[in-house]
Amino acid sequence: MTPKPPCRSTVVRARRACDGHELWRTAPLPRPQGPLLTGDGRVHLAAAGGGALALSTKDGTRAAAAPTATCFALLRHPSSVLCWGLEHAGVRELDGRALALRRTVAADVRPTLPGPVVGADGVLVVPAGNEDASHPVDRFLTAYDWRTGRRPWHYGAPQETAGLVPAGKRVLSFGAYALEGRNTSGDVDTLRRKDTPRTRSGTGATAVHLGRPLCPGARCSPTPTRTRSSPAMPREPIRSPPDRAYRWQPRDTRALATPCAVVAGARWPYRRR
Image (cartoon, rainbow, N blue to C red):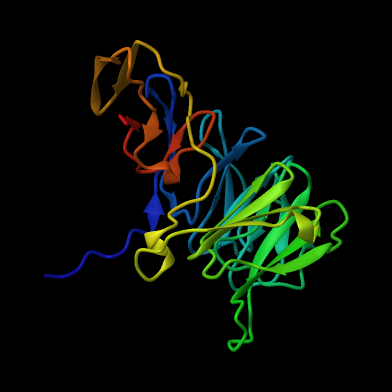
């Protein structure tokens, strides 16, 4: 049997989060790499073959493109989009609407997974590999002031780092053996570490994703009665006993984005706890 060729395109659909009604869909687009992002009236995606696209959240039309941008994934920041790649040093800031290059920050390091993060306090933290294979630390975290580009600190990361997320004025990192948190100011006295159990080799046994829960267009509080509806799911009441609440949770959060729950091939939308 001849194997099927890999999918090289995708169709992005926008659905109303409250009832699943389809608002619009695009013509075939290059296959996205990384999550879809929304902001400034745009849906942003990095194409697997290279380049970045911006779609209008109003009707899904192509609003802007950066065909020469090589982005492994994108990050949202107020009024801009951050593009980073595994093969190129630095994090590039693109205009949120036109995708024009503004500047490059952290040009002295090449990002690695789980990828850079930037918090509301204006600190960009970039994970990077250690080229010295004999060193016990396999990855480092380097912080940059987003406004000035200055590098305030550079510390070792947990072994086999699998998750990195900003949390207020702290940054949390998750590895194969430990969860670490430190202040984004870089003060060494703010470091907190908690060892985590390891059931088998590799971080897949301990860390799947470190980030915020997604609740697109739905409350996450208990109510006695809920109704769900979608094209693939008949309308039916969901009743909660007084002593039990439902947690509304997407089955596949990789392709959901607020506020209009943009879906690219994900099942719609929730499951019961």
